[in-house]
Each structure stands twice: as C-alpha cells, then as structure tokens.
Amino acid sequence: MFGRKKRHADQEEAPQAPALPTLEDDDPIWEQPGPRNAGEVDTSDGYVDMGSILFPAVPGMQLRTQVADDGSTVLQILVVLGNSGVQMSVAAAPRSGGVWDEVREEIRSGFASQGATVTDVKSRYGDELLVDMPMRMPDGRSGTSRMRILGREGDRWFARIDVLGPAAASPEAGAGIEKVIDRIVVRRDKHPRTRLELLPLHVPGGAAGVKRA
Image (cartoon, rainbow, N blue to C red; front, side):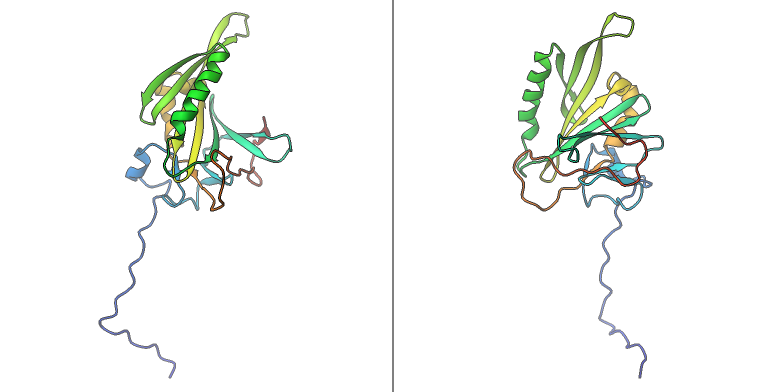
C-alpha cells in the first residue's frame, strides 16, 4: 500500500545542471580576465560577501572602505594584500557596454590636471591606464607613485579597479593580484538603476581588519 511506485521504463531522470567552478578547481574560467558575473562560479565557499562585490578570501587580507558623508553608504573598497592593494567600486551600466571608453577619458583628464603622467597600455584586461603621480618621498626627495586603472564591464555593471603598490609597478609583482581580480564576482541586483549609479556595498559582518578610509 505504501510501497514506492515503479518508474516507467521510458521515464528518464531529469538532467542536472553541471556544477559551477569553485575556487579550488583548476578550471579554464580562472584563466579568463575577471571579474566574473554572478552565476558563473560557485561563491558558496571561500568568498567575502560585500553585497555587490564577492571578494575571494585571501589569508592576511585587510579590508578598508570609503564611506559617504551619511556615515553608512560604502562607496568603494580597498583590499590590502601584502604591500599591494586592490581598490574597487561598481556601478550600474547598460547592456550595450561602452562605459569604459567614456569614463577612461574623464579619469585621464582628472589625473593629468593633478600633474600626473598618464599612459595608455594594452593588457589582458584590454585598455587600461598607467598613472605615475608625483609625490614627496619620506627623505624629502621627489618621486612617483604608480597605479594601474582597469575598467571592466559585465552583465549590466561597470567596475573600476585600481591596482596599487608594487603590483602596479611590474608584471611579476602584479601576477598574484591579477589572479585575485580574475576571481572577484560582481552581483548585480534586479533593481532598475540609472547609468553609473553605484551598486550597494556593505561591510561583511565580523570581518577582521576593516577600516574606514
């Protein structure tokens, strides 16, 4: 009476969706320039949830945030990894893309007005800016601080990513940082938003090393 019904011979098992790549997998997707769209990889383990940004957890990383005047809205994050850092903000963008071509010129003009030397370079991330900003060294001598600025576009989002410190100065030092960038995931919500409206970010609960910039 309560026995299990036999399955008809012609009734097939429903196909299961293939498992998404995880951070532990040696999957070809990690060789592709990031960040990733939400749903492309498994973020259930090994990620720090910051709302619109899911950041791969790296031992020893320190998280700092820039907060708006209201004291609660997070504008951008800075993740310090050793002597280098990844500074990032994300905004809404049209599906058609093309945001980086426009924003890049604005960024170039802004740094040039501050006396920086801005160079266009091609990398695996496409067109990026290499910024050498004049600075005063601790011993009083003049020097420069180098920064790489990447613009990446995904499914209705745009991310500006600044690479700071030694990782911006040489390909060898930047290789580890690029692996981190390729594993970042951007999670675009379903709310309608204006072009380049910042996507919501929050400080993860219980996160260590969180400071407000």
